[in-house]
Image 1: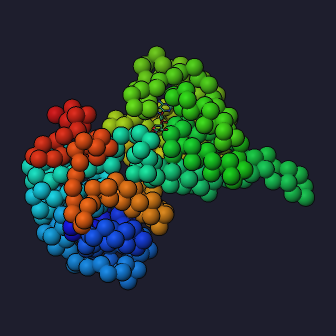
Image 2: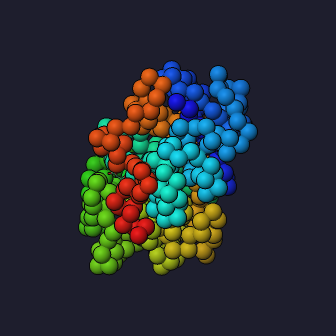
Image 3: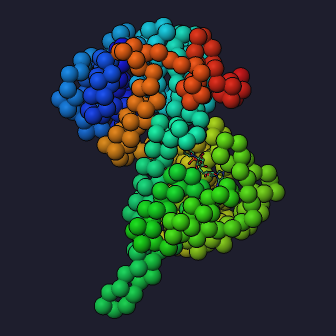
Length: 371
Ligand code: NAD
């Protein structure tokens, strides 16, 4: 079995799909690992950190020989074109983003697995790249907020008095939001948080934060949130407005899988924020939770700074790569037997993460969106 690992081509992407320890594990299962030369360098893994691997100069050279190809972000069409028919592509393939890419993978008879499609069940937790990368992103968002705030996050007693801790409001309490709450708490802020899924209240409170109750509850399928009705949105906006106005920093992480990010914070709410308040919109890339966010930019609206960071996990490439590499290994290694790949279509996790196989788009939800 030849596992090929591609260099990332997306602008600003510094993560890598393998780290030295994980490569050793693949070798232990009898696989040969081929890396694109220098591909680990942006994540601070030099070529000589990898023992007994083969290096190839180009992605095409890797694709021409690999039975399984790893990536972080989807490779460009011209690289997919060089993959062997019947080979496997595994990564965060952004399955909803491009019907064209899904069609190309199917037509080229590539079996592709998108980790975004992984069923969110207990057994799949160790493979869950959305969770591992979400945790990195949530941590980073809290640090970005603290870094841009003109105030201390912790309470500070000094010779001439005491400074009150900053108030941080986190909206969206999935994996990223909970990590943002935990990080802001560790730096000493007073944290409030809100999510439409009612079971997040207990998780928020267990981190020492206060849950903002808006009376809107919208648990959807598979443990995710569903989209809100217009009436629910209005109710949510009214109750949230007050918490937003009191916050020194607002971190938004709300998402609905496969859909544009819900617009939760209106221009009117921003207008009522304190001077010097900071907003970090983690959903900037998928449309933003905040009116006025520009992906990849910092925007001032009156005296409020709105930051729309993109590809946040890539800011911490060492640990983000280590976590991601382990997710990939936990996903694919059960199907590597005696140095060969033996996929098991009865396995609900594997089958659930499949985007394309045997010439067709397999994932029903993605098919529906793309058709
Ligand atoms: P996500 O990134 O899809 O969404 C982030 C958060 O935004 C979610 O908590 C969601 O409820 C919230 N949200 C959506 N619309 C909102 C709105 N209008 N207002 C406020 N909040 C809104 O979520 P995620 O972090 O990927 O996790 C979602 C769920 O999956 C959670 O229940 C989590 O516990 C579960 N999960 C399960 C596993 C597993 O068992 N393998 C792994 C990870 C996560």
